[in-house]
Length: 371
RNA sequence: GUGUCUGUAGCUUAAAUGGCUAAAGCGCCAGUUUGUGGCACUGGUACAUCUGGGUUCGAAUCCCAGCGGACACA
Image (cartoon, rainbow, N blue to C red; front, side, top):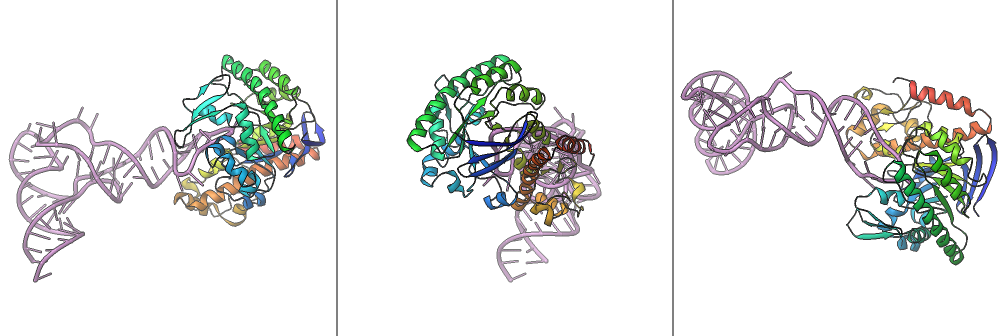
């Protein structure tokens, strides 16, 4: 069983440490999105230096390229990409269900590679096998994503996710026997915005022999507090919970942590960075806007990241306008640092009992300041 | 100097035999981005037919001259 220690509780919120074979994660924590075994535009050294504790890669992408056998041959994901820290893999379910022309049946999903059109099939068993080959510390169960946000589709997705979870657990246990208990499995709670479905799904997952939980299918942040209260009051307290794909908006991180989530991942911060949308304590700014052309101040004066410590807004503006690679590098360093440290600060504020003050001050300034 | 070709928005190009308010991409301006999307996506902006004559109901399109450019030959 994955070791998870809780140091402090405050309502549903908790401060803890997840002990993985590749190291500890002090929670709450933001996990960097390394979809193809790399955080876009950043080196692993930069990720370590900006304070990231863990990364999350994607099974779908790695199955297609370079293939899971190659990663196994390399010694596993952490060795392959030189992260040498805690790693997660998402099951690939979310990506596959986002593809056009997927054929879904009870057994699994058939789809065409977005790279060369080759036919692929993924089942709960094959996703588990792929994740074992990739060798991340924490695996996510292969789940079924709803076609729409309608109740009917949500119910179908939930039902199948539950059926597939049982198969994931069985396959995971089989692989654990073969290879040793060094990799861990999270179940995925579905149910969309329907609280009764969320309750059902949480109850179903809570009873399974898994190491933690992913909370998936959060399409809209609105109402997330109520949903998380419903789910996290049911999930066992002593296992970690990962809020899948949320973390582009700071408010999601505050709400997520407040209502009992331990880790987060999101491609948002680095994607925003690549497109010039950069976080500041006064809200996100588009550095490409003409008004920054002559702005020789740091992007965010109080920020400790490499970008803010060394470069000005005018310089970043110039790099973006000229489409220099370094624009994406510096912007990604900053955005990732900003989100990682915001969650770290949430952790500190929970420890010293100032969470509510920190939250209200942060959110008030972030969402109301006119730049 | 002579010959040939050429001159459409900031840039690169479109506009069949002359015929609807001369298009598009880039640029510029702004917005979007939540378990995929590494140069993404969505909008917006453009006092543009080198100048002056001529032919014609009508010219970016044909003719003449001037100015500018490219190539070739001296």
